[in-house]
Image 1 (cartoon, protein in one colour):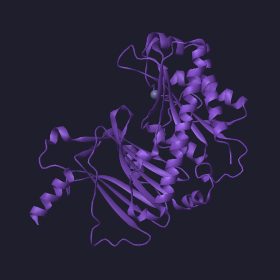
Image 2 (cartoon, protein in one colour):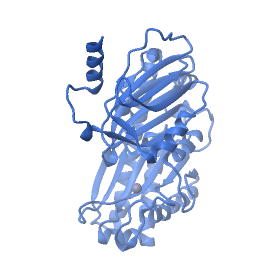
Image 3 (cartoon, rainbow, N blue to C red):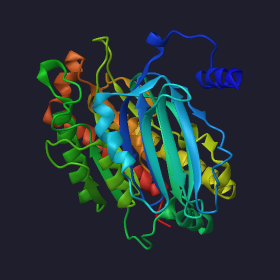
Length: 380
Ligand SMILES: [Zn+2]
């Protein structure tokens, strides 16, 4: 028995010997992204945690309406900055699921994530992933089965998962990065990212409204809005697309240029729970469609932005589109892209980014890109 326990501990740790001091991993942030299709709980860590699903305890009766899954993350502790968010997650009240994240000493010291859900109402998938800024994420998604059923019956699964039928025009959410106590990067000439994103974002919104789009924003002034509040708002409005505006910063002062990030969902959702077998096909189809349209959105926005600024500034560097798990994009249920409009850490580029005329040029490029995407993905 004792030997078995030691073997179990070793299996959970994924090794036979380890240095405890340098293996401690911190849970740094926790987000609760809500949506009509999926709710996603995302835990972030300062390095990759081991994540083990415990075998179901024989004395625990899994029923048709309740399945329990226990994940053990050895040698992980909840950081002080994440405690409130974890507390909030532990208090989630939902008919379909509950989740509890807590410190445990057994079978090994670390954290336990206890997931309980009703397989008649939701289906579960979870996986770990790399995230921008060298963090690691654990994404736990609960998908609403009624919405999955709607997707199954739709001719275009991504366009028509929305419960809003016959929408006359596309609903666009523009996300001005950072805000309030979160300055983002502070660059040359004392420029704050949160101010530049607000200024450029407002121009994008005005241009889109002129074109007749239905646009909303995640913040309309200099205030702090958590990432999961931003994504939940977009998801609950069943937006057709989500574009997040940011400015970059590099370790090298020479780094400059424009890049656009998109998050392929197929990378995030590798482990679909066995109970969800009946939903697997439709989820995979949905992810594949979402990836295709998300990639198209990133390409349209990026190409048009580069094209537009190059008319007047041929020296702007095109850093291309990049596949990456941006934290704000992970939480969205619709095609989404994050644009890094330039480097505030580059003296000349920062000076331009602070100019009204250059900001208008960038906004025009983003607006053209969104229009180009909408033309290729018409309303159904
Ligand atoms: Zn940013």
